[in-house]
Image (tube, rainbow, N blue to C red; front, side, top):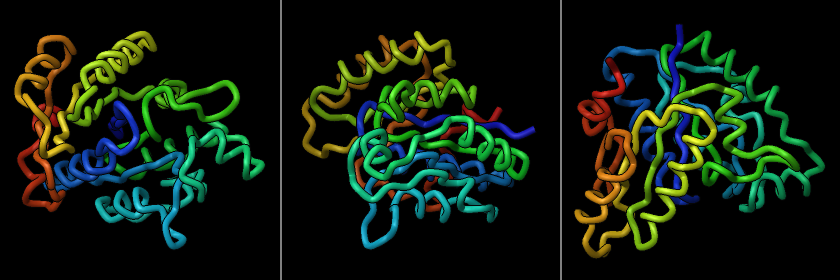
Length: 220
């Protein structure tokens, strides 16, 4: 039976795709069939959606692209606004069906959310509702920069309030000049209450060799 994780973040641009690709490559290096999924993406460049392309490249099976990415919008704005502008309503049931198709083909499905955990997807539902619909354990990516403590702890609170399992969190060092980095990570270790899975250094590249030994705690 397929396993999966829902990767969310403290904000947009904190490294969800980096972590999702690292997870895919780590599981693939252990002989697993893996596929990445980006249910909703907003913001294209030259007709391509970079997050989706990276997830496809990190997967080791080929599947229907429409299942990998059911909803793609050109403007780099909140998904619910991009969908409104396109005259589309993001349907979580459609995303569930796409996920189920992927889960029948892979050992692991890594689902990358859009923006932060509570980003609106339509008039009523958010990224939290999507994670609940898929019923996946959550991995939180914390972009280590000034202000991340509040963002991380609020997101942890929201994940737990939803009833989902927070499988762990990742400290992604996106600001090479962040002051007292180690102290900030230690503070989150004390307060999050779920395991710190990885500290990803600034400039990390998700090649197979780099991914091989990470996230061991998730493959038990």
